[in-house]
Image (cartoon, rainbow, N blue to C red; front, side, top):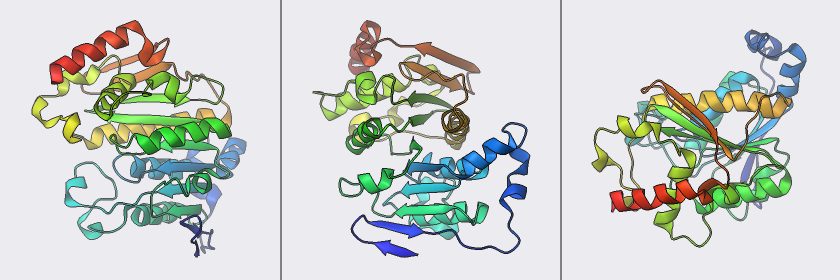
Length: 300
């Protein structure tokens, strides 16, 4: 392992592992992907920002898909409050760096994986290094991290990198795909000029305009955007990771059908419902604006 202080990244090169065979390890993927496609996935690099609730299970899911290289970032440590949903949170990993624990899990799945580890998270100083040579970006940021999330999506747009965000909402997931030639993250969510609280509401409403999860929330006092607090489930995180795995196959292999923004998608396993619709103008849509006013009034 070499430490590159200038970019705050730990470069972890693949290591030899006697007895490991990439072809054997991921042979059961064949059928859903071809042998040629599996080798293409082996040569792809995916960047994941955040190794907590969704980011950690994203990394494991994509590693089992056979993705060969990762850039992963997180500055946080595992705590007991993470036990309900975060795949890396166990008694043995308490107070351990999330990015180190999840990098080890990825390497235990594929010891040949090429890992770039960013233990300071994604910052203004390392964002270029984080996205260098990346074929796809996966949003694993905490819900309330909007500033850096916006910067990363903007940089992906600039570099021509497709990006996916899949949010665990209750016992389901809402997801959006942003392609270089489609609607941008900013054009869809329209955060510009809004204060932080309004941005939180716009993010939530933009992710899930259909709000399938609203009937499952039995204690609304646990959701407080102004205090940056909300409930979560492992079921939602795992469903989000499944969605990201499927989108990765489409984006990295050029397979369809793909419905990028302004299309939004929301599956709620508890309600047994799936909605996929096109939302022209994103949050600039007339009905979205009405929903925002109604939601703000309700939560106030």
